[in-house]
Length: 186
Image (cartoon, rainbow, N blue to C red):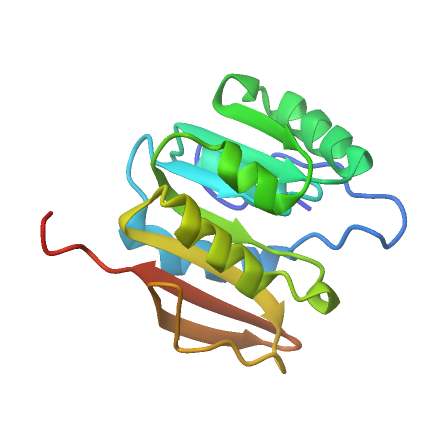
């Protein structure tokens, strides 16, 4: 597992021991971030909601994120993410949040540009996460929510004020990208 692009390109990250953490593979991660290029700008804010190893959040930092919130309810996952963040020397752009994903979304009190969701596939967390993001209201107009899921899981075209703008399949993995509409007042 390594950082694919940006200032940390090629940096090797520690992989989890065992199979309780399933990091996004490099091929899917590269495809996912390629789709996000139009939505990333220098200093954007991202949330790696089910952080696991920190793989996605570190990739976001490498590609220009000014701050990334790393959220997980597993102490072991957060310890691994912290280790990888330290290996990359980017702790100044990382905020680690321990606890349930819904509580952690509610703890983020600044506008978010990109949410990265890679929950355990069988846990059914994507729609509750989208609902909590909508309820919190911290996703910027035009902001993006990237959902990694099993390809057989069909996500709705619209959910909680978000519209699916892309959906791709990479073997057994599906990636669906939602965007928040830009309000008429903006």
